[in-house]
Length: 160
Image: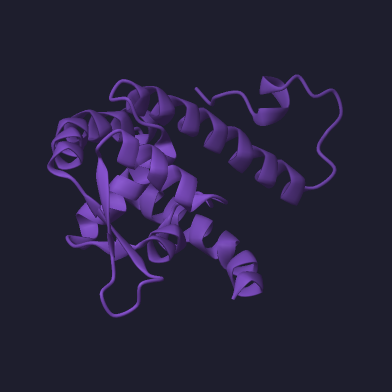
């Protein structure tokens, strides 16, 4: 059985003005649903999705990083990376170290407490991913990834 389309979901009376509009609204609706579901999971561990993202980046890098480098790797753009890192520092999830060579540069490192929380989240996160999108087969996932990456091209070219 085919799931209802977005037009039915949002009870839109008239057809969409264009396929582009329908596609964009589908992406936004899906993103919102997934973001809310993931946010619930992160809240169980006292984190926001942005805080999780910072910690994930730090764990993946395996060493302290400048805050602007962290900001450039975020999934969601965060206008105030300093405030986000401040909150993580208050929770004792990151520490800051000034660069000896350039005092203007501040390195951020994940604490052991943060790494422990991330390790706890790993399995429930994999389960959440499977629950949200595991009904797609590998070919569909590959196609979806390709289409999403292709759809971002004009925006990422504008930003560079």
